[in-house]
Amino acid sequence: MVALSERLETVWSEGSGLAAWIGTVDHKRIGMRYLYTGFAFFALAGLEAGMLRTQLSQPDLRILDPDLYNQLFSMHGVTMMFLFATPVLSGFGNYIVPLMIGARDMAFPRLNAFGYWVFVAAGIFLTSSFLVGAAPNDGWFNYVPLASKEFTPTRNIDFYAIGIVFIGISTTVGAINFIVTILKLRTPGMTLNRIPIFVWGELAFALTVIFAIPPLTVANVFLELDRRFGFHFFDAAGGGDPVLWQHLFWIFGHPEVYLVVLPALGLVSAIIPTFSRRPMIGYSFIVLAELFIFVISFGVWVHHMFSVGLPTIALGFISAASFVVVIPSGTQIFAWLATMMAGRVVLKTPMLFVLGFLVLFVIGGLSGAMFSAVPFDQATTDSYFVVAHLHYVLAGGAMFPMFAGLYYWGPKMLGRMLDEHLGRISFGLMFVGFNVAFFPMHFAGLLGQPRRVYTYPAGLGWDVYNLLSTIGTFVLGIGILVTFVNWFRSRASGALSGDDPWRGETLEWSTTSPPPGCNFETVPTVRSREPVWDQSELRGTPQPPELGGRPLAGGHVTLSTDVVDARPEAIVHMPHASPWPFFLTLTMLVLAYGVLAGSWELTVAGVAGAYACVMGWLWPRGETQET
Image 1 (cartoon, one colour):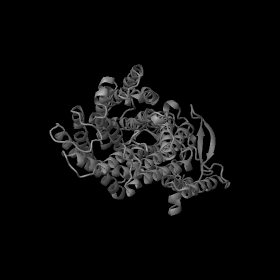
Image 2: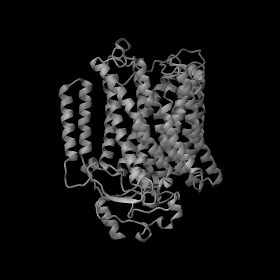
Image 3: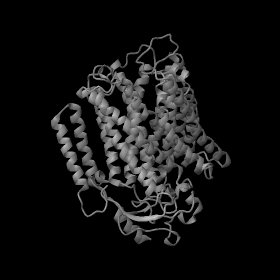
Image 4: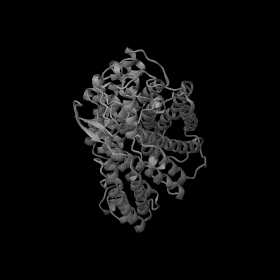
């Protein structure tokens, strides 16, 4: 086994240095980059939120001018939705999914690297708008005609439209990679009914992306054509329809809510069995619930348009669908509670964040059901009640599972334990701060405070609620900072974790911490839904060949299996590290700035450079797989 380990390390190691850093295709390194980059944008969004809440902490303040407030407000939403939530969940998926399913990498490693670099480029492009004082300023959903050239003639909205197209490319190639990886690279024996629930969540997330991103991309292409070349897709005077933007945006926008929540729900389902010391109750119902949420999410987009003036019969159908989507969410909650009640709960930091998530998600879900009723929705549209609901569902529903994931899988990623005492302090500050920040917004909204408000006069009854929200925001920020300190401190000097510090049941706990370049010395064969609990040969040592382990030491290869029963079908040759995804992204960034500036020279240079990079990427070099 020592000789096998050394041989695999030689084949799968990417080395160090600048070339290896640029060209890496290792899913673990890419997953960590998604996490670090996503949380860096999270910190930026937090700074924006702190400035917004400071401006609103008292009536009639003038800390920010209206234009800067609009830019910060819009970029806070864009950053949280597009540059934090989705990428961080993709980071967990990139790192954990191949380990959970017993694969040695993602199906398309270079495409995986390309998706990450495009995400970084999109973040740089959007954030660079602050340098010229032209950040997006019409809200994160960018309604026309406000976003048209007539009302926003500056480049603020051009940054938005081009940047979102970039993000769409990144997210879509990542989703394709997840789908193929999960369906075709599962380890032998991992039939459909043995796939871990977290992997099902990532699959539902990827399927949602495939159908949700194209309408958003089309909407932004249409908008840029309207603004740059005088088209009339959203111009009523020219035969267009501004409501078309709302339809296209919310056909993406409401599935986006579940797109973010689905992997988070799967993450919760990964943690609860480990800390309840028993298998998950209702596995099949939870999986069906995740897939049902994916399907029904595309039937509720008008939920956001009840006040637009659409036909009443259409509102009735969408209202009914909005109520129905509560059922699969409730199914999962009851399954989690049943699992905890039937087991022996261990209250470590990951479990505390999961319990906090359950409270916040139920509160957000209840207010969401209230919005399903057309009269209530029309009465509270564009009020702070909506802001409160949005943050409970998205921030509470995704952020708390993300932090649970950091504490749960941190030992696997770092090889060191995070400090439990600091983790509990972080959870306490975050949970209290979150509720103090966002629960008062319900009352401010019911008292008539509109969202996107820049300032407000005294005497309207909003003062105390805004002050509480501002205080809670800073407490929440301190709690988040404690976890960041904990992470980097533990990475440098934390206690060694061992391979399986939590006594988990899924395959990632059967390999070393951190995992080797090949993930597994022998690709395992599983015979259970909880293989590490049920197969003693998987604990601490590679599965021997006589029990089903496959060394696959003949090259840079992994195993392909069939979709349903995970029977071995082929040995797949995987590509090695390559700089071409990085260089292709650079040329695309030049192209984006060329389109933004209206410079045909830059645009042509970007197109020519991209063509050259694609040729370099695909040029045969004796390898059997180039993506």
